[in-house]
Image (cartoon, rainbow over all chains, first blue to last red; front, side):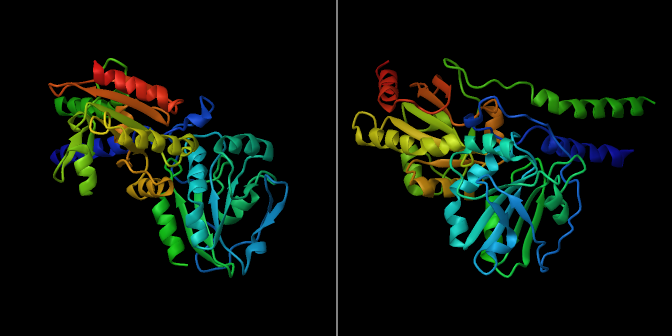
Length: 197
Length: 189
């Protein structure tokens, strides 16, 4: 009984740390952001392995052009940023931050591909609030989440994980991080991973 | 049985605690006071001089050596904050160039949900000269009622060390000239 009582402070700290929202919404989105609340941090199992070739894919982009992973082979390192869904709190500020961090990606000879499982019209209206994004935004809408599923980042409710992948110029997966869907990934960690390529 | 009941009581309290903690903290109100926001004293000696704080602990905003402090709540991930940055630099530069204002008016930024690395990147990208602080775990953000960004707060520090909020608004500062007049009016009160 006493040992149980001793664990109560630990339970209290856990509840305090895991409770509540952890995002700041830009006024750029006004009242248009839907808050899904706290979600299960990770709800899928990776199907790709660091050190092995990344699966090839071709997806439609906002510009109308179809983009394939293989078109960057030998030319650019590729960072893939999967975000769960348009018009949700954390996703809505992650890419504007990467937009500002363009210089950091360029310094590592890397292109960024932003992907969600939303359709093109949704992605169009959502990303227009972010300013002019320098990187392609791809739609993995149909067949629904097929590329996300290839990587093992399609959740059971049909949205994607908050995941980052780095694929080098030889097409080898060098970094894979499926983070807590409720938190924005740390930019420094991503840049440190690019430093190692 | 009594012990079991008390355990259930404790657990019930713990489970409802977040709801109480999150019980609608309102954004700062003009005419009111700031919550006790603690920021780390910057390591940079120039910033220590600018703010009038020393040591390696924390300080609160009303401890800044100034008559008026303008606080920008921003995020490097916020498109409006990015667009607003050059205009805030212009405001800072106008304050610094004015002999009437530069000793009395200080500007600080708090990057909500931004790590130190992210705050530094924002600062470097826009060549921001005034001190920026990281609120990586949203502690200050929660104290301020989780306001959207950018959000600006102006406080007047009174002679007795107390303070009063004279400006608390969501969104960028539309017109720096008018805002400077508002600041000057606080100095003559």
